[in-house]
Image (cartoon, rainbow, N blue to C red; front, side, top):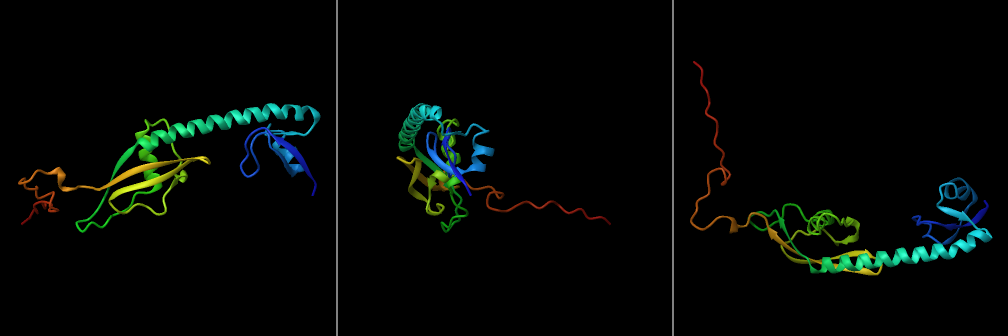
Length: 182
């Protein structure tokens, strides 16, 4: 099979970033990359254009790095409190996952910035109450640390002392009266 070299004009996963010179199969270049404007064939004119593509790539990477650093500063300042459903013995019902943290972060950051749950590094879902620190990889050079405080849901803080719970809250439900026909 014959291959050819092309210059990428945009980032393509598993192939390269813009301004990279890559070797691909001729059919892939001829039928997909070049017609869609994702790559340029190597000619003297495109080699001259390579410098402008490299400058554009450097500018984009610098912008991404600055945005990631700014977001990391904001995340490092956050202290998020989450509630975890627990039983009387303290055993957790369910857990806090990376998806839960991503959703909570979106709310805390104003709803404009969304962090992919795959960037949140949890070894396993959080099932214990207390303080936790979670790593978030925002960029290959930038990692943020998120401080999380997990509390038990429905702790006794809700009711003042001496106040008796209603029967419905104790788990009792009133039965409907049965109708007897004679």
